[in-house]
Length: 430
Image (cartoon, rainbow, N blue to C red; front, side, top):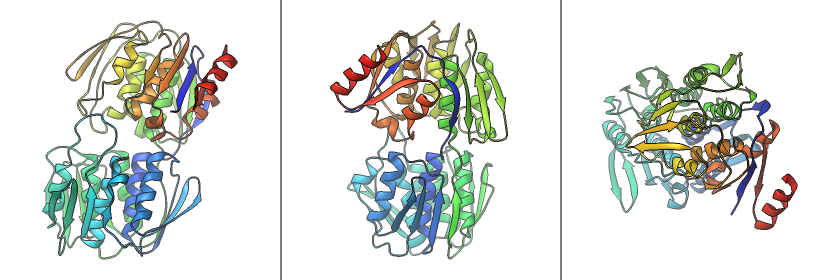
């Protein structure tokens, strides 16, 4: 099993380029099969989740051609099945976006219940509520969601809770429904806006993405397009907190600073210097950092996907910090691993109290999920010894060339696949 071996104690310094947003790209790739024309999508991150979804799309008969590492051409004209196999779904949660895409285009979709990281309960009731409101019959049988309709008709839909997945999934289905759909209490995340912009570039009529209300005037057909995915705000934030935790000086390139406002605000609160440019952000961390309080919220609040990264950083800040996790109840599993590295943390329910320490000590830890794995790597970079991070397959689901990018800004980190490789690297780094 592959693992990262990290030697800490070196501030990260330099520039790192951010790739395309995984969460936007997954939905955009699913939506690309809604036309019979060829769609070109670029600035894709080359990560496991993307590759699994492309395999699932190929598996139902669509044509998928990789132009290069970050560009793909997809043609959904010859799709011969609306049944997405369990083997694809169990690996990534975002395969459920094929529900909205297939239901919108063919008025029929069969998709196994989703898997993904075990970070807590992520019910899909709001997805099903939206599909039913549009006129679909939706049943769950033998672990599979089956949605079908003679016709989809636009409706006024109010979501009970803000859900990114439901907002995107129902938006896709409504794109090819008859008449006007009004969706209220929707998610406003940048990747919701990106998916809406992509659909509009194919001829959809969607207005209001990024606000509380999205209005969709259904169309009969969508057409070819060429589209570039937005930069990944979570990857950017991960490197920004890596700079903070290691007392470094890092400039993240190819970002949209507005998407990072909540992250930037917390970095400033703990005492980092942050400089914004048109498409880059520089984070400088000097001396002692101070504690703060964080509560995860839907966008534009502080993102739950950044909670482990700031948690690691706060464990190295002077004073007492608190984190309240309001999105996923299992998001604190990484804190047990962080305690093995010397962190002083107490968890009660959905709240964690963190007493800052000077430095972590090296240990062997295991990545419980995607973002927690990246956060534990940050912790390893801020130790006074060697850290081994197991189960890095989670990290590879969402970060492209993670170890390579870290080495580019001064990290001592190596991916190894055997004990022989691990021993060789330990000898190399002393």
